[in-house]
Length: 137
Image (cartoon, rainbow, N blue to C red; front, side, top):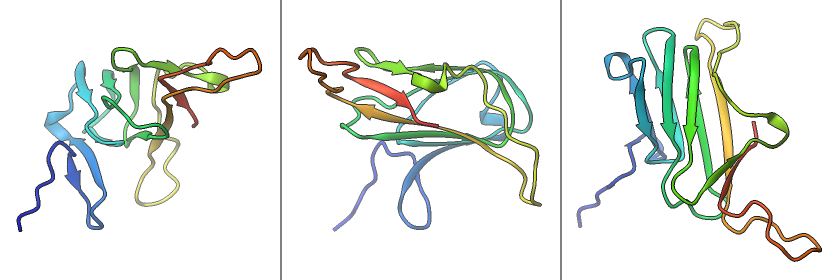
Protein backbone atom coordinates (compact mmCIF):
# COMPACT_ATOMS: atom_id res chain seq x y z
CA UNK A 1 0.00 0.00 0.00
CA UNK A 2 1.34 3.44 -0.92
CA UNK A 3 0.85 6.33 1.50
CA UNK A 4 0.70 9.89 0.23
CA UNK A 5 0.82 13.10 2.19
CA UNK A 6 -1.30 15.49 0.13
CA UNK A 7 -1.57 19.19 0.95
CA UNK A 8 0.33 19.06 4.22
CA UNK A 9 3.64 20.78 3.48
CA UNK A 10 6.70 18.84 4.52
CA UNK A 11 7.08 16.24 7.27
CA UNK A 12 9.82 16.27 9.86
CA UNK A 13 11.63 13.21 11.23
CA UNK A 14 8.74 12.27 13.49
CA UNK A 15 6.14 12.70 10.77
CA UNK A 16 4.59 15.96 11.98
CA UNK A 17 3.83 18.10 8.91
CA UNK A 18 4.91 21.74 8.70
CA UNK A 19 5.44 24.45 6.08
CA UNK A 20 9.02 25.70 5.63
CA UNK A 21 10.18 28.72 3.66
CA UNK A 22 13.81 29.79 3.43
CA UNK A 23 16.34 31.76 1.44
CA UNK A 24 15.42 32.88 -2.06
CA UNK A 25 11.85 31.55 -1.80
CA UNK A 26 11.09 34.07 0.95
CA UNK A 27 11.33 37.67 -0.18
CA UNK A 28 9.81 40.96 0.92
CA UNK A 29 6.22 41.26 -0.27
CA UNK A 30 5.61 37.50 -0.39
CA UNK A 31 2.24 35.98 0.48
CA UNK A 32 2.19 32.57 2.14
CA UNK A 33 -0.91 30.44 2.66
CA UNK A 34 -0.39 27.99 5.51
CA UNK A 35 -1.19 24.41 4.53
CA UNK A 36 -0.54 23.04 8.02
CA UNK A 37 -0.70 24.47 11.51
CA UNK A 38 3.04 25.16 11.68
CA UNK A 39 4.91 27.70 9.54
CA UNK A 40 8.69 28.04 9.89
CA UNK A 41 10.37 31.01 8.19
CA UNK A 42 14.13 31.17 7.69
CA UNK A 43 14.78 34.24 5.50
CA UNK A 44 18.30 35.30 4.61
CA UNK A 45 17.73 38.64 6.37
CA UNK A 46 15.11 41.08 7.63
CA UNK A 47 11.88 41.17 5.61
CA UNK A 48 10.20 44.55 5.22
CA UNK A 49 6.76 43.01 4.57
CA UNK A 50 5.14 39.57 4.58
CA UNK A 51 1.53 38.39 4.36
CA UNK A 52 0.45 35.07 5.90
CA UNK A 53 -2.94 33.49 5.27
CA UNK A 54 -3.99 31.19 8.12
CA UNK A 55 -5.09 27.61 7.29
CA UNK A 56 -8.34 27.04 5.40
CA UNK A 57 -11.21 25.12 7.06
CA UNK A 58 -9.57 24.40 10.41
CA UNK A 59 -11.22 22.06 12.91
CA UNK A 60 -12.39 23.33 16.28
CA UNK A 61 -9.39 23.66 18.58
CA UNK A 62 -6.83 23.77 15.75
CA UNK A 63 -3.45 25.39 16.44
CA UNK A 64 -1.47 27.66 14.15
CA UNK A 65 2.06 28.85 14.90
CA UNK A 66 4.38 31.07 12.91
CA UNK A 67 8.11 31.06 13.73
CA UNK A 68 10.77 33.25 12.15
CA UNK A 69 14.54 33.35 12.50
CA UNK A 70 14.70 36.95 11.27
CA UNK A 71 12.76 40.16 11.84
CA UNK A 72 9.62 40.74 9.81
CA UNK A 73 9.02 44.48 10.01
CA UNK A 74 5.46 44.47 8.70
CA UNK A 75 3.53 41.22 9.15
CA UNK A 76 -0.03 40.99 7.84
CA UNK A 77 -2.15 38.03 8.97
CA UNK A 78 -5.34 37.09 7.14
CA UNK A 79 -8.04 34.66 8.19
CA UNK A 80 -9.96 32.90 5.45
CA UNK A 81 -13.44 33.95 4.33
CA UNK A 82 -15.91 33.72 7.20
CA UNK A 83 -13.17 33.49 9.84
CA UNK A 84 -11.77 36.31 11.99
CA UNK A 85 -8.62 37.00 13.99
CA UNK A 86 -9.21 37.99 17.60
CA UNK A 87 -6.10 39.47 19.22
CA UNK A 88 -7.67 39.52 22.69
CA UNK A 89 -5.45 40.84 25.47
CA UNK A 90 -2.30 40.33 23.36
CA UNK A 91 -3.19 43.03 20.84
CA UNK A 92 -2.91 43.00 17.08
CA UNK A 93 0.28 41.51 15.67
CA UNK A 94 2.04 43.81 13.20
CA UNK A 95 5.66 42.56 13.33
CA UNK A 96 7.68 39.53 14.36
CA UNK A 97 11.07 40.17 15.96
CA UNK A 98 13.34 37.45 17.36
CA UNK A 99 14.86 38.23 20.75
CA UNK A 100 18.62 38.68 21.03
CA UNK A 101 20.44 35.43 20.39
CA UNK A 102 21.29 33.74 23.69
CA UNK A 103 22.76 30.54 22.27
CA UNK A 104 24.98 29.60 19.36
CA UNK A 105 21.86 28.45 17.51
CA UNK A 106 20.48 31.98 17.24
CA UNK A 107 17.08 33.35 18.15
CA UNK A 108 13.55 32.87 16.87
CA UNK A 109 10.21 34.56 17.41
CA UNK A 110 6.96 32.59 17.48
CA UNK A 111 3.34 33.65 17.52
CA UNK A 112 0.54 31.15 18.18
CA UNK A 113 -3.18 31.09 17.51
CA UNK A 114 -6.00 28.75 18.58
CA UNK A 115 -9.17 28.29 16.49
CA UNK A 116 -12.69 28.21 17.87
CA UNK A 117 -15.41 27.06 15.52
CA UNK A 118 -18.38 27.77 17.78
CA UNK A 119 -16.95 30.43 20.10
CA UNK A 120 -18.48 30.43 23.54
CA UNK A 121 -21.97 31.07 24.77
CA UNK A 122 -22.43 33.44 27.73
CA UNK A 123 -25.62 33.69 29.76
CA UNK A 124 -27.14 35.98 27.10
CA UNK A 125 -27.31 32.99 24.76
CA UNK A 126 -25.59 34.66 21.80
CA UNK A 127 -22.38 33.03 20.56
CA UNK A 128 -19.26 35.16 21.05
CA UNK A 129 -16.31 34.95 18.62
CA UNK A 130 -17.44 31.99 16.50
CA UNK A 131 -15.09 30.95 13.66
CA UNK A 132 -12.18 32.90 15.14
CA UNK A 133 -8.43 32.55 15.44
CA UNK A 134 -7.52 33.74 18.95
CA UNK A 135 -3.95 34.84 19.59
CA UNK A 136 -2.56 32.89 22.53
CA UNK A 137 1.10 33.96 22.40
